[in-house]
Amino acid sequence: MPAVKAAKPNEVFARDEWAALTRVSRWHGLWLTLHGWLMVALVTGGTALLWQWHWLAGLVVTPLALLLVGGRQLGLSILMHEAAHGLLHPKRKINNFVGQWLTGSATGSDLHSYRAYHLTHHRYTQQSEDPDLGLSAAFPTTPASMRRKIIRDLTGQTFLKQRGNQFAVAWKGLKAMLSGESDAAAPAKRDTLAGTPLNRNGAAGVAAPVVDLDGAKRTTRTVGRFLLIQLAVLLVSLATLGIIPFLIWLAALATTFQLILRIRNIAEHACTTAGGDDPFSHARTTYASWWERASLAPYWVNYHSEHHLFMGVPCYNLAEANRLLIEKGYGPRMTLAKNYGEVMRTVTQPAA
Image 1 (cartoon, helix red, strand yellow):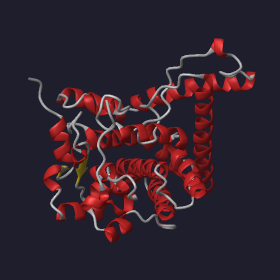
Image 2: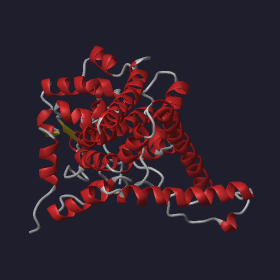
Image 3: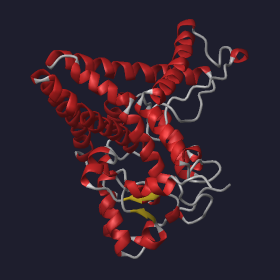
Image 4: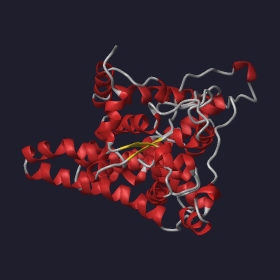
């Protein structure tokens, strides 16, 4: 199937509007990265202090802390996604370093592998060749099915399955590294590995499978960076407020992050037009309240229709792109939702 038709910016925006929308700031992406980590530090540190003051206060606030930290973990993945598009910083080396080490590695992602995979998603959005089609094709689903998914996410089952697959591939890659084996050196021994290193959000779990030893080695390096970041978080935690901040970070990564990631995936493409040729119909924009922006939709990720229409627009300009599109009368062609509750009602329907 041919690639999806692209929107033509010169037919939508004035020249000065387009120039303003696509300008990549030298500081905004760096500030957002710092903001993400500061929010994690404030929430985990504040919760730790409450635990030290009184265990009951800590217990009461911990669920909220897990929600907020899971949201910032998604935020770091979103910023890695920005780097995959070259939008985190105008200098490529800085863009790639921040995208690889300061954002993507926190959730177990490899920027370069993700970039190639994700651009294929953009080229064939909601077409049969779209590697992300499986994330939306199952919807609408039944309330019982949705409940099972939520339970798996919040009990850590999704995390353990995905991370287990990733670590299994990394182990094969490590053994190949230690033995000096490679696809070029030993083509007859090429493995077919069922690993799934990352998904469109940059998180481990739903992606094109690793199919060779060189791919397994890339996964080994990805896991190595992931573990180094976890070690850094642990050391900072122990050096300041003890083990509690790290435990909140890790628990969020295993639970709320997985659920927020799922909701984000669902909101972006589930129950939108599949196989159509109108670029305005392939993704959904979900208007988010302040609390949804703090948890489910950090860093303007909810403006997904605008991102697919004009993927050269940095995340901090997507709200302005939405305003201009609505002002220019494009709203009726777009898939828009009032909030995430509306999205979940749309994609969850009783069995016939």
